[in-house]
Picture: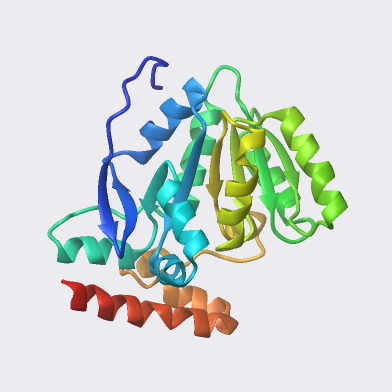
Length: 247
């Protein structure tokens, strides 16, 4: 485990379509130090689809630029970097989240973790599955289908609990907007948008087999599971074309 006084490396920042991506050899170690030191952190897991969306949504673009850590979640982002001579491994958001949970489960006094988002029951089952794997984890959870009054009540609960690590699974860009709006209520927490991770942890959906992941085809498997996403997936060839054009 890392020591509290571990010195944080300074991530290199590279621009992709005027959006930052932070380059580090080990994102987990970097975030663990921030967790241990209580340094409030907003993590964005950026892929090609989010990049194209941010080019149309100036509010999302501003949030990405203001984030403390932007990791290369998708193969499109690492493809863009490779075209420019930068070798950087993908850091899928779900794997980043899982690694942090495993690290926290090994500490002497595990920190409180929060799962927020997903359909009713999903975050609850996801939390139960993780607590079966790591009984020492302490997880609070809440689904993402709340009325305005229910959300305000939930925010008060969250503010009182002050979890060290908060996963928000509301989908892009809603989760990024929500984090930016409310992260001040838990100023020392690490906040990460985790998309559909709760569905996978709860067993509602499955992640792409390893062969698809290793061959940059996870997006294709996701389209197979969620064919209604086809219009959003049109951002991928556009990103590919612009990556070549701008080079």
